[in-house]
Amino acid sequence: MAGERLGLADVLAAAEDAAPVASLDVVARNLRDRFGARYVSFLLVDIVGQKLVRVSEEAVEGRGRTAQQIDLPGSVHDDVLRSQKLVRESGGGQGERVLAPVTNRGDTLGILELFLPETDQEVFRQVEEAAHALAYLIVTDRRFTDLYHWGQRTTEVSLAAEIQRRLLPSAACCEAAEFVLACALVPADSIAGDTYDYSLDHDTLHLSVTDAMGHDVDAALMATLAVSASRGARRAGADLAEQARRTHQAMLEHGRRTFTTGQLLRISLDGSRTQLVNAGHLWPLRLRGHRVEEVPVGVDLPFGVTEQAAYRVQRFDLRPGDRLILYTDGMQERQARSVDLPGIVRDTAAEHPREVVRTLTAAVTDVCHGHLQDDATVLCLDWHGPRHGARDTRGGADT
Image (cartoon, rainbow, N blue to C red; front, side, top):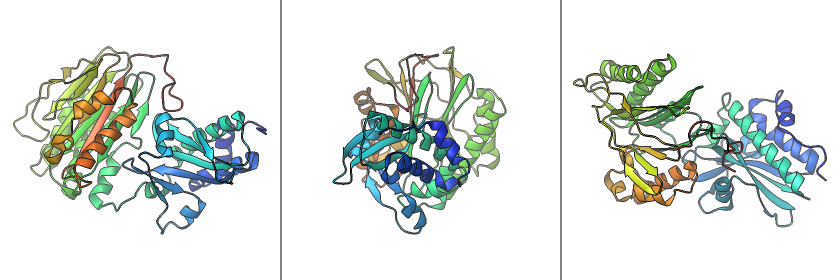
């Protein structure tokens, strides 16, 4: 039944001559030809991680229409994404329904769904291979098409939100041998200038969380200044002090008398040091063992406040096994004050960082009845330490 093995290279090779919007078609054709698969579709996780949007040939052709949306929490799809394991169930006379996670370096893009007339373990392994290949194809293809951006939008997107989203990294989660990182941003009804950012080079992990003063397009433009100045300095090879200085200078020169709070971190992958600049921002939370506590770092003035001198680069105590939480004040302001962030971090200690940020932002969204007055942003880092060889990140979750 299994036939010739469907490998990652086979699918990628078949996609070379296809248009960027045809990733699903390539995978579906392979699965139909080899196993008689039917009704192959890709369920894309939306921007805030609460819904799935079905992407199929019919959905793409009818782009002007609303694609099918599925609530994620509590569903079988939620189980697939949490466990990062293939799930199979009865297809109601259509054979067996198979759901496989589509994940790239920990970033859960969605789920590959199909119906198979006959199955065995080798077929399931090859479906998992196809889902893994689809993840690579989507990550590559979304540079050339708006299809996946369209699919992720389950609500109307304002101009301010469009600017804000373009500032964020293309993946909200990243895994490596030394760490697991997950981020989430839930925008306020009136965009309030939050951003997160990260970058990984050969020996350093760079992190930042920023919160620009203001709302709507003005806040988004101030966030653009801060993030662009920070990235420009980082990409030019500047040290952390210079990165902070350039961010501050950009706000002084172009910030329209506004300011931005933020934290910049650099973590050496060999475990030798972690550095932090805190520009008027909230203290981080750290889970160490069974204890969650605020880390009382020194606080300088926000970027753009004229009285601030050179920013202090501080040593930060980060040890293998630590979980670090960075967040903006929208996670604790107004109605969100009632959310017990340390308690949630403690209760989710066994969860993947991807689920931690989803649980934290869902708690804030729920207590605000879906209408946040301030952006809520959170970043969760699990630090495993240098060359943690026992970890397997291929599928996006430890095994």
